[in-house]
Amino acid sequence: MRLILTASLFAVGLLFLFLGAGFMINPETAAGDFGLVPSGTMGLASLRADFTAFFIVGGGCMVWGAWKRNGDPLLISAALFGIAFAGRAVNLVLLGAYTGYWQPMMVEALAVALSLSGSRALPHVAINHEDD
Image: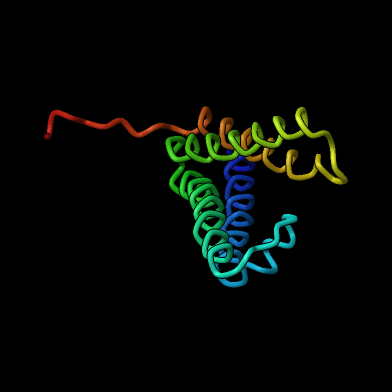
């Protein structure tokens, strides 16, 4: 079961890494897939900076945690995607549904569930302060 969990974390993390790379390399196309339209150079810079960071850190922590069999970095992924899910839920309550609203929420919920499951199943690395 742990093998399936770590393989799933690794695969989903890679997907997020590729999404992040897409925002760095071609932000216009990546933004369109998310219903965004950048406004000028500042908008492109924001997409490249913010969306790349979000997906690279979130996916990178999933890959790192799976590869190293370490539950610590998975908490970072769970927090990032959990906050994204909460933002979508607030938008759903305040503004209502849009076509396909549930798809990104399912991806984020899956990322949170995988990350939290992995964090519980994999060991955490203790920090030894006696050497400081």
